[in-house]
Length: 503
Image (cartoon, rainbow, N blue to C red):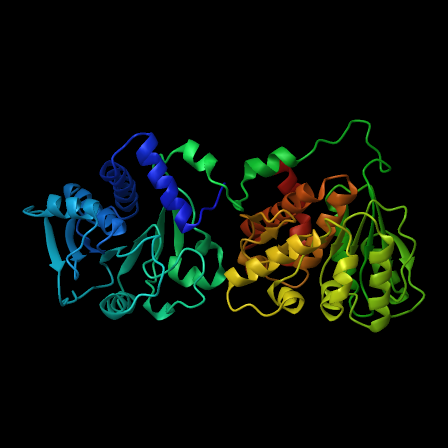
């Protein structure tokens, strides 16, 4: 699914009006009907008081239409229209006129000063002040209104996007003047701003409301932002040949572990094997040997010459994929070994954890990372690689530039993990949950990705499939165990169920 910028959403709106064809007022009515229906479904109590706060633009017109539709359904509605400049959007004005003279809606048009209503915890507020067209922070009276709404205990529902929040970059926004919604009803498509962690406090829960905007217009919009859906992943998943054997299902090399960090090697190894790999070799120091042989007997261990850390690279010519990083530490000899692996490997690699930290200390080595390799940093690791980012939007752009510049896939881990591609596309993953914020979860992802590469998946397929599977296994684990009790091993143990679900 495409994720549109605010400008693109307005283009799609206009295309629909011109080509359906449909009048803009009729399209507004269609959107308002969808919003009103969702509100009535979620809050069926007809005794609940509803307050609608509408601005002078298209979003305000939506709000006024919703006020009318809720009143027609028997709800007690008060609508506040802010018209301090005497300039209303034509469709907003039309919906204002539809409300005038009605007995079932109290319309309060604000032209100078608002006497703010006393809101109670059981009241419902519809935020329709500003939508996707906002390009600067709210100030003056509108900022005061948003702050008063945030101070109330009422339930707040925002139409399309919480007022005061810009659709992409909020680095210079006054976040104290942004509505904090309990629910955001997004029209037709999600907005980019929904996928950044710092905006969760504003958007609350999100529900998409399709209103039949032009499919042709949507197809014609050139997007670089995408939301990964289950159908996309299912189409990538291959079936194993009936004549498959361990020699045809890939041989991967993992370089993981150090004294005291054998667990990272175990988790990555188990995950790789649970993802369908034919053979796995693990390069690790001697100190990790005994526990790994007991914990993952299916793994062939290639011991480093050093007892405690990885200090040298073994010949990697016979492996279809290499994953490096979990638990290896940042010793200078380990760094040399990593560089040797980069120089001898011609195919894509998976680089995670300390491999990324070593790269951040030797940024010139980025030129030596094989094309289409997969880097899996969490936000701090990415900041070390590309510099500190003030916002998630800035961090996404830095990761995207890194992917384009060096021809890599960069996975910025988190809720809605971002997959930045060498072509400049960014895919937001839709699986995963807060229970996966636990030590070792990233090691599991490294094993999954390395396994898929070794099995012959193209890097673009491996990275999307691997990240989705990782999150899906975590979701299945959380359903069974709860988020609080989830540990990294649970993600591995639920990989079989994740595969079955996709099949």
